[in-house]
Image (tube, rainbow, N blue to C red):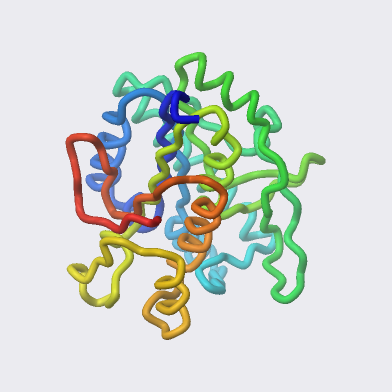
Length: 260
C-alpha cells in the first residue's frame, strides 16, 4: 500500500461555499495539491437559503437535513446544478481538468434510501456501492472528479447524501489503490473546545476523547456526522484526517485538527 500513488480527497462545505473570496481561496489550495485529487462539496447553507426563499423551513437533526420531495428538488438544483458547475468551471478556468459529477453519473455511487426508523430523514441516501474502477479510470485520464452531495438508488431515484460521508466512502473504496490523504474543510478552523472561541482548536483528536466530548456536549451539531465519518475511516485504514477551514498543502501548514 505504501508504494501506491497519493490521492488527495478534499471535502468542502458550510458557509465557506457562500463566500466567493473564501471559496476561491479553498479552490486555489485544492488546485495546488500535487498529483491525483478528488473534490467533494456540500452546499447545505445555500440549499437552506433557497428553501427559506421558497417558503420551506429547513429541518436539521444532528447536522443532517430532513429531505422531503420539495427539499430534494432544491438539493438537486443547488448541489448538482449551481454549485457543482460553478466549482467545476472555476477549476477548469485555472487549468485543472475537472469534471462535475453526481452519484448517478456513470452509476458512480449507488445508495439506498435510509430507513425511517428511528428518524424519517426522507429522501436521504446511505452509500451501498462505489464503482471504484470507473473513478480510477477518470483519475488515470488526468481528470479531477468533483462530486456533489447527490447519489441515487440504482433505479432512478436521486437521494440527498451527506458530503462528508461521500468523501469518506470514496476514500475507503480507493484505499487499496492509493495512499489516501483525506481532508474535511468547513466553517471552523478545526474541532473547537468552545464554539464561541475560534482559537480553541483541538490540535489532535482520538476516538476516546471524541466520545467524551460528544457525551458532555463539547462537540455537537454538524461536527458529529463529520467526526463519525472520520473515525469510521480511521478504523478502516485511513491513517489520518485533517479538519480545518483551509486546505492543508505542503506549503500551507495551517491550524486545524488532526484525527488519528
